[in-house]
Image 1: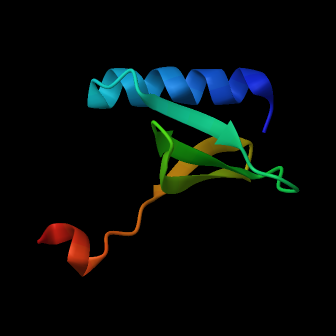
Image 2: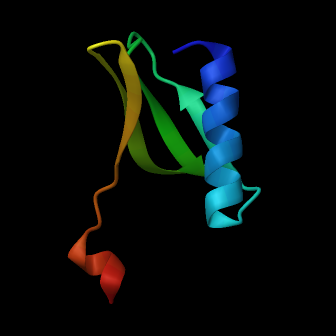
Image 3: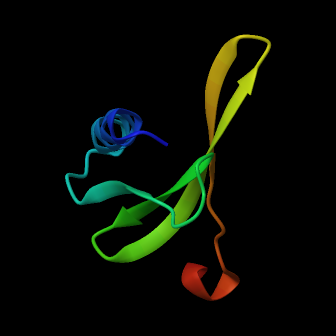
Length: 69
């Protein structure tokens, strides 16, 4: 993803979740997705989807059962 997209996604996540600690970072060797962090903790992946002239982003986050305790 382009730096402009990463900046827009970072702003969106910070505003939506009310946390300035969220960052969206480029993935090594991948151009269709990026990683989301809170501080230095990885929390998920955003995938870019361009279909039929429309652009969307999909956020995936795994939650382990041990994290819920």
